[in-house]
Amino acid sequence: MKWNSIRTKVLVALVACLVLGVAGILALMYYSFERNSQVMALESVTGAQKLFTILETREISKMTAVTEALITNPQVRDAFAAKDRSRLQELTSPLYPKFKSQDITNWMFHTPEPDMAVFLRLHNPPKSGDHLNRFIDKEVVRTHAIVTGNELAKAGFAVRILRPFYDSQGAVTGYVELGEELGQFIHTLKEQTGNDYGLLLSKKFVDRQFWADSSAVWKRRDTWDDNPGFVVADKTTNSDNLMKFDGDLTAIPEQGKVLERFKNGNSVFVRGIFPIRDAAGNTVGAMFVVHDISSFYLSMWHTQNILVILTVLALALGTSLVLTLLNSLVFRRLEQIIVVATRVVGGDYETEIHVSSDDEVGQFEQLFEQFRHVFVDVLAHVPELQER
Amino acid sequence: MWQLKLRHEVPDETDSTIGSERIAACEKGIVVGQLNDMKMRIEEKIKADGLDAAAIKGKIGLKSGKVLAFINASTPDDPVTIDKMKAAAKEILNLTL
Image (cartoon, rainbow over the protein chains, first blue to last red):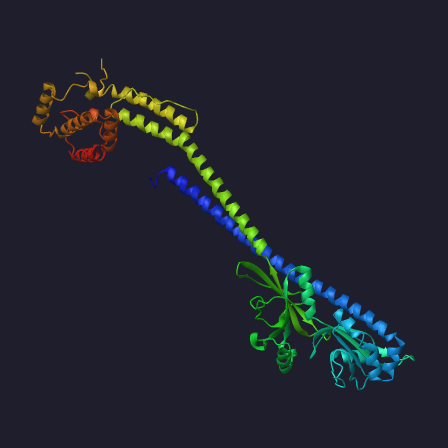
């Protein structure tokens, strides 16, 4: 192969086109995959956040309806007004398992202000008389209206409803509280979306000793030191690799944030996170969302391979066609001219150039044939070639 | 009237007329004969190998810059042309002149 021949140059140019074409497709597919996975991650985060809000609203509505039934029950109302703990427990404790089956895990009665102590704790009856001093306690005392929101307490991180209880004269006799563990939400979220979730709690709002104690009670490993700023309260996967976040929970924007894409075995995931605020508006935790995009990744990979193969085939076919055309339209005819020119110089004055077309090369063939005639005519007058 | 004779129709170099031309050139102080000898050796080689004479002579002519048909016993031995002719014969016929 001659490196300075037109054929080689054209071939190199076509191969360069092929390489550029394949590189372009790969770059386009990579960009497309990056963008799509980013969009999918964002959709997972925003979708999970919306679903979380819907679940929260639904459960608050449910608990509001339950408390409505409680405060209108005269027996319960009177027992609580009389501060008859035994009677109140007797009336309400049969209901607790039913509530619990509906995910209402916390149920408390509080004495009115200024004491505002726990009068009866249905989920832990022996324990009472303590003061919680939470934001929602202060808020319900201030407003004497229903207060709802997430509240992180020793019993856990729960969405709670706290509302005043009135006697038959309409005076506030105390408060009733219902709560559902937010950890349960992530399992519902997983059922609804198929994604994996993790509920993270900021260490600033979690008592270290309580975390150690509850880990011991539940016979699970104390994970306090696994992450610098948070603990994983609950998660839908056994894999510890999926929940990784190095940032500050309080710095997560309200609309959530897409984290990185990562591979775990043969699977490809995208991660995102959105903040969870308590009733006072503090970012006390976050929901970690892990979306499996393996099928999308495989599909993209498949499409990319097909595109690359098709591009290579198309460009190889194009290269072959271009070279064949160049060969028949230009190179072969030029070679024929060279052969004839060489033979004329070698003394064969009879071989003619056949003008095959009136294209550019054909015009040159015609010109050269005319030149050959002139050359032969000139030779006829060269003394060295004359018959002596 | 001039009449064109093709190379194969040109009389052989052994012709006595040509020998006399060489003597005449030598008498004039011009060195002649080497190019003509080379041409004859090339023609012998082509004939011996049964090659296409026009094609080979054309190539050598183009390569050396001298049309072989123009070389005869009285052609002056230009050193540059001789070198080119040697190189062309070597390259095209693998013939060392």
